[in-house]
Each structure stands twice: as C-alpha cells, then as structure tokens.
Length: 187
Image (cartoon, rainbow, N blue to C red; front, side, top):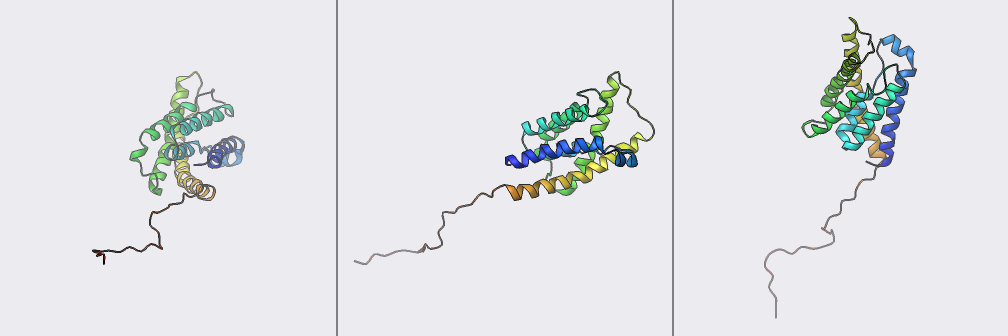
C-alpha cells in the first residue's frame, strides 16, 4: 500500500458520500440512496490495517451525517462495527474470491442501514419506515454486493499500477558452474 492508493480510497469514499446526497434523480428513481460506504469499509477492512479501517468508517459516517438530516454520529457506529468485525475476522474470510466479496458486500449493504435504523429508533428522531423498507434494504444490499467486487478489482488495479513490485533476488548465479560427485586432486 502506498500513499496514492490510500489517498484514493479516502477520496472515493468522500465522492461516494457526496454523490449519495447530491444526485437525487437516481435516488428517487430507485427509491434507495446509493450508499457505497459499507462496500468501501469492507474493502478497507479486508485489505488495510486497523487504523485505516476505523478512520475510514468514522470519517465516512461523519460525512454521511453532515450531509443528511440524521443526527451527527448516527451512521458512524454501524460503519465502525462493520469495520471492527471484519478486521477481527479477516483471517477467516476468503477476501480474494469474488463470491465472498459479493456476499460480504450484500450483508454489509443490508446490515449497516438496518443498524442505522436501530440507532435512530433509540433517539428521539422518527425514521421513516414502511412496507417498502425490506425491499429498500434488499436493493441496498444488492448494490453493495455488486460494488464490493468491483471496488476490489479497481483498487487492486490501481495498486498494480502505482506500487512498485519488489525485486526478488536469488543467490543462484546463472554463470556459475556446479560440479557434483567426488573430486580427486592429482599430485
């Protein structure tokens, strides 16, 4: 991981939060906000360290809350829990497999909004829920499920382009001759 890919990760997160709140025509057409923050936190948790994961989760949650009508900090806790849980269990997850990335993204895309609704119900705010809420959670889960492997592919592509490949040096020289068997010295 170099600095460029890390900066690009935070920049994509900020742009996705901005796009989630500013492009209302697609959001009204699908009746679902285009929230890619759970997929980005999944990527960070499975590829980066603990500090990057938690920083991305907290900043993403604060960015979402600053541009929405929800109280500040409501979206931070579900994203933090997602990043923390994936970070703790990342040794058990097949993070290089596309189907695992899809299912993790699907679970995160449906679980984070569900946890956010739970946190909002504990506050004095009245979240808008109804019969269509289950379908919205399913659509957000599918969106993040599809986005998660795409994000892995995109960031791995950037990693291959901008990071240097370590040179593997060998102690074997091609111009060296190896003599096998017994050696007799002639006097």
